[in-house]
Length: 300
Ligand code: GDP
Image (tube, rainbow, N blue to C red; front, side):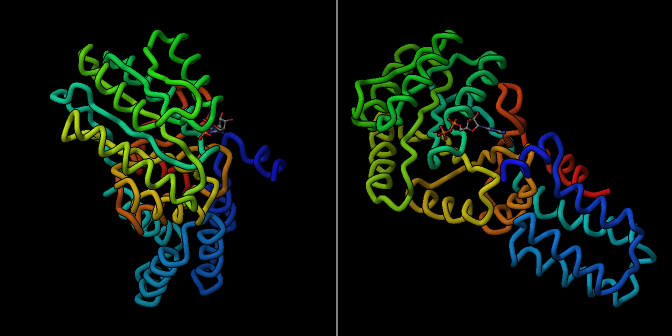
C-alpha cells in the first residue's frame, strides 16, 4: 500500500487509468464499457453510481450517439459533473452569527485536527476572528495539537483537563466566544469509532448545550472523511449523520489516491454539500471543492 501511495502522490491514478484507457484509441464496444466500469469500481465510485453511468453509456452507444471515444468521454464528463455540481456548495460564514459555530466530527485519523488548523488559517486570512474548542477530550495529543496550533497562530484555544466533559468544553467556548464577539468558533470532538454508542450520545449532548446559548448553534456540523477509505467512508457518514445531523463534508487525502471516486458515491447517496477537499498535509492544501476541476483532472 505504501508503495502504491508513493507512486500516486501528486497525481490521481484514477485520472491515469482513464488516460491510459483512452490513449489506446479504443473501439466503441462492450469491452470499452467493461474497462470503464472496472476503472470506476476500482476508484470507489460505488456499484450503484457505476451501474447507472455504464447503463446510460451503453444505451447511448446503441442509439449511435457516439462517433468515437472522444464523444463518449465528453458524455461521461458531463454525467460525472452532474453528480458533483449539486453538492459543490461552499461554506458561507453567516455574518449575523456571533460566533458562527462549526462542530467538526469524524473518526480518528481522518485528518480532523489538521483540517481544523487549515480551516482556522483560512478564516483568519479572510479577516474573521477565531476561537477553537478542544473537544476531543479523550486524546491528550489532540488537545495539545490544537493548543500548539493556537499559540503559533495567535488564536485562543479553550480546553479543560484531560477527560473533561466535551459538552462542557463546547459550552465554555461558546460562552467565551460570545462575550468576546468572536466571529468563528471551531469545536473539535472525539473521533472514537462510531460503533461506540457513547460517541453518539456525546455529540447529541454537545448539540444540546450549544443550542442553549444560541438556538441556531451549531451552524455547521462538518464531517471530515478520509477519501482513501472508500466505501467505509459511506458507513461512517451514515452513522454520524444519524447522530449529529451532518451539514457539510470535508474529504481529505485526495492527493495520492486512486480512490477519489468516493466523492461520486458520497454525492449520489447523501447529496450533502462537499465544502472542502484536502490535497495534502500543508495549510494551503485545503481547497474549496471545485467539481469542474475535479472532473477535468480525471478525464483526458
Ligand atoms: P485526526 O486523528 O482525524 O485528528 O487526524 P490528524 O489531523 O492528526 O491527521 C492524521 C494524518 O493525516 C496526519 O499525518 C496528517 O498530516 C494527515 N493528513 C491530513 N489531511 C491530509 C490530506 O489532505 N492529505 C494527506 N496526504 N495527508 C493528510
